[in-house]
Image 1: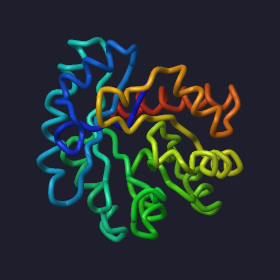
Image 2: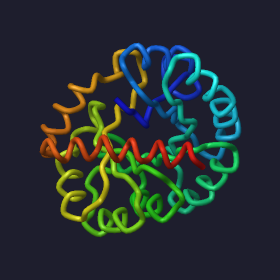
Image 3: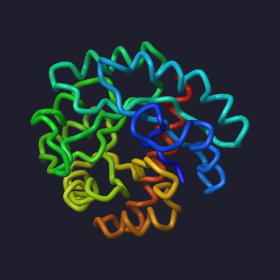
Length: 217
């Protein structure tokens, strides 16, 4: 399993980075992205601390740890600037919290994120055809999530992504130990959202390719 959307105590997760990555390794993960919730008020506190320990934790536990951030409820007009700042602080992976129907995310967030320097648009809710096509053109991955609430629109996201030729990834948005999802359960959730077996395997490959790209930066 490669999971590029997780949280620690640096935002609203339950585990410190060492325990999260240890549990992920024991669960059979090959790579994990630590992407705590960030906005202009706290990225300078979060990103350098994760970046500082990522390589050591990965070496200790035998998996790849990708330091990142999830830009969360950032006003659309600020997303591009905050994404640039996160990169400069050491975030190899930039995820943006998309327009999930489970939260009052500002309209226009999906589009602003896709215009910025991000890697994954997380749980993008009622994604439009136009934005799915734009994600495909920009090479930004769209997320299928195993997290309750955010997963309510997985089927819609799959349909939009497949029609537009956009890349999909499957992530957990883990906040607690029980959120770390075995590969087979992630597969079942993806199939339940409308992906076929080939589509799920492609999503896995997309995650693999993204990790390789990000860690080669």
